[in-house]
Image (cartoon, rainbow, N blue to C red; front, side):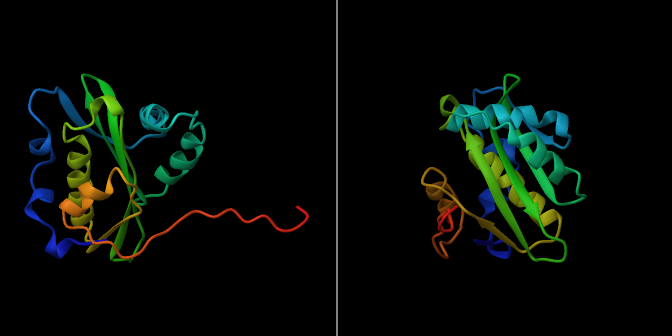
Length: 163
């Protein structure tokens, strides 16, 4: 979690300044369901699988005003890194999800640029706290930018007896 009132200056800089020089990078907001193929392509490249469910799930979330913010870094026209923020009306908390970067584009600052872009959007919308359920790749990055570990979480699947 990060208290944005104590956010480090790195997250308040223009996101494009956080990207390593030499890459043709464009930061774009994904606001239409028809653009979700870009998110899907990054997820497929990072995790494998089809991620066909992304269109219905995120498409329905984009239809809710003010609920979901999705942004992506494009390198030479190709989606290379994506990230989301969920907002909850009246809550001081916003939640980061889906921060992924294709392996061939890692180490260029794309994830950090998206982290800054999302933090700035959270501030713009008046939220104070930013949470993340991070994995081993992103944990060191978010800690460097002021996030504090509060607890651990893990997914569980429960199947009742007999079915």
